[in-house]
Image 1: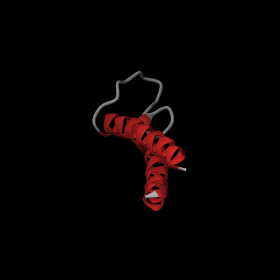
Image 2 (image 1 turned 90 degrees about the vertical axis):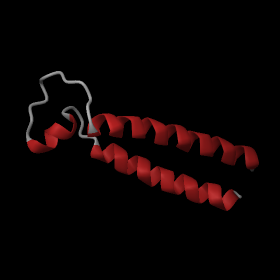
Image 3 (image 1 turned 135 degrees about the horizontal axis):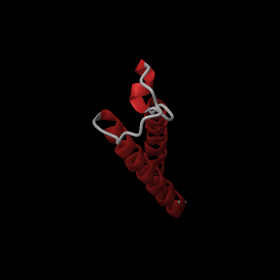
Length: 72
């Protein structure tokens, strides 16, 4: 059981790193294509999905870390 939790934690960590790296600081995904980041915009579409996925992955990562510590 411990091995599966460790593997799951590694996979979640890599997925969390990937999702965070996809989020461009300041301008969102529009910043990749040269859109000005001085205009206030709400998160829509892919940006909103990445934001929500980041939160979900972080919660799962912390949850698995706590379960792993409890089982040790």
